Length: 414
Image 1 (spheres, rainbow, N blue to C red):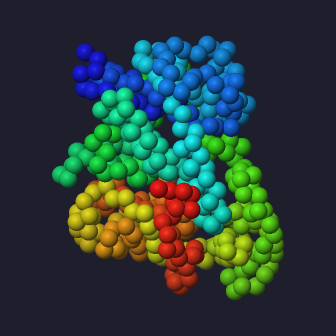
Image 2: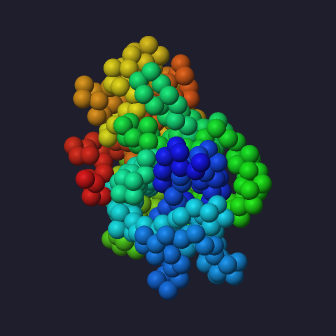
Image 3: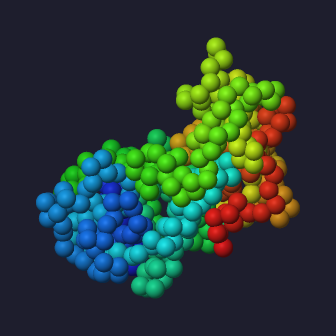
């Protein structure tokens, strides 16, 4: 009978993965309750909202309403169109759904995004959203409605382990999302359900079509939901207009070779659109926010041999982590869909900060990114990670000013 395995709050994004996740939970004997997070996306005008805060619904949007709800070129995971899709799926499955107003909490993520750009770092708002909202505030909301679990459509797995539940990569390695979940609290892993983690994406879509869910062919959401036009610099400037000011472009010897209109408009590793020509490929190798300076160099100047990180969140006991690190090192990943690289983990006594010395230098690393560690002896197991505060090249030149405060504090983190 439905509900015999417990009540589950399902984060319904309006996408195919969360739709199938809800359907699988219902089939397996859970009592799923859908939840759509209203975050204040750009297309969310008051007169266009179709669902109210904390309002249960089992009805579906009409086709015409759904079409009107989707803005031209809209995409992401929190638009009015997505709310309509989530509502339609809930109606098709015969399950209740609520819309919760997280606009204030989501404002914190946008503030963080701007603050990191101001500081010359590379933010990852989607990881912060998972940490602070999907597996943060949603757990609190789940407790309020008496739910035993929180579920999402992420492609990752919760696996029983010797020391308790473990976070592992999803079965579909091309769609694996364990990287963006590394900040989940270890004590909450036992209350997390990831129903599609054992499936390939193609099978998820096939299951959605078999069930007659309208999201079966819906494109995947793309980052970043609150910047739907991909104009990151424009978004930052609207909130921090003082950033748009001229600064110097220098080479690695310190020689001024050009001028730019704001350091926030550049990313580490950027090659196109730098604004200067030296007759050979050049890359952005450093951003100096304090002097509004961009440093460019050759591809070799991007090589990073060591990183420092803070705000560590470990998903295995610290003593077990040290055993693994001493025996085999770690596999470190600094992009959501990047490759993991072997390295040596140097853990601070308090476990709050750490360094990784890579076996071979890597590129494309920048302060502000998340670095997530995996077990080399069991490559699918996520050990946890932290946020990069400083990088060191083979010549020990550091990019990113050392910090004596926690990374999130500039954005108002508690």
